[in-house]
Length: 509
Ligand SMILES: [Zn+2]
Image (tube, rainbow, N blue to C red; front, top):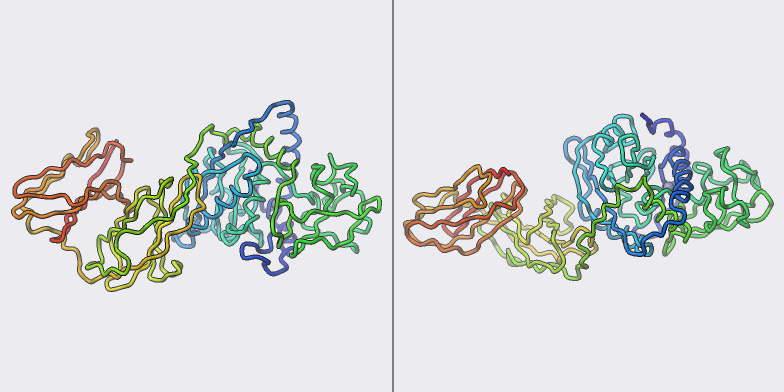
């Protein structure tokens, strides 16, 4: 089993060298990549191998959609996980950054894992072994942790491939997922790109140490230093000819001001705008044309079969934010249990992220829900408190739409009466339900009333709803469709001005 521990010292050195400068922009901070020297060398070799494998092969000119799985890693007690909204932002940024190269990413899923060793030390023996066990090789797996080890923002754990022997995952510290470059850079490593300063990792050029002109070899002792005129570019440095010679001179203002000279005495001129570099503070970043070609080669190489499922996601662009319907803004709702939140469906959206908090920042005591319907039932809030809530629409591809403007309501202190006096008898059958397409709800009623009927999943998602159902005197039966539901526990909720009935049902398939 290859473990990261032996490279820890190298990564310490990189961290020490590069943690300077204040963040120049709101979404940029000093950036340290923790990808190990071994994996970076493997990426460079894979890049040459891919070039051979794909030589003469005509690659598609249409967009290839690549699935991504985000793992929200928390401590073992379940706390500390990154909010879903930052993942949605990160996927949006990733797609913007790769939009000029016919690669777009879509959300395979967001999965949660509670494990303190992965959370705090994903590169440790225990952390890496746990990640290996979690890996699902049908998407790019990105683990969002508290720490990526030794001050690094993120790393790719190679080598490439779709098996237990490969690894092939990305780790990103949660404080860096919102950075405009970090995830894009690591996905660049995933697609076999080395750093433009390959061979200099952990050794920013220093004339008193490395000389000026520099020697023939980079500090790793095996990589040839690239010449300023590019004459040895096919092999030296990163092995990519349209990225200029670079001996690692990160700056925090997007400029190169060192005066390093190549082994022949010519001054080099590195490009701070490359995503694969460490510069920050630039207005924009890019991949060079050859880097893009290598990314395409990697995507269509055998080692990347598992991220090309030949599937086209729902790519509808979502241009509207949700209109919140219920509770009405500033409404005083009578109770604090069984609160139904409802909003108008948004064109193009098939998922919604709902945030609710006592405070408008949504960061103090937030509750967050992801649902595929335009309503949500919350079991219980605090009585007599003001709450803010907002809803963000998305689909598996388009995650760039903002939240609705927040609205607020105030809970009352009434506990929903867990019965309705007018109901003499009621029954739900069959329960459990296995083969049948419907569950039948039957009520025998003494006094007529109206009620909203909901079928609610264990996570609060309203999967079926019939508002304002009238119950006259005598028996009324309602068939609730369950054929398309995933197996699990659900609650049937009958909610009226006179009280509430709930019954748990079990769906088997
Ligand atoms: Zn890197």
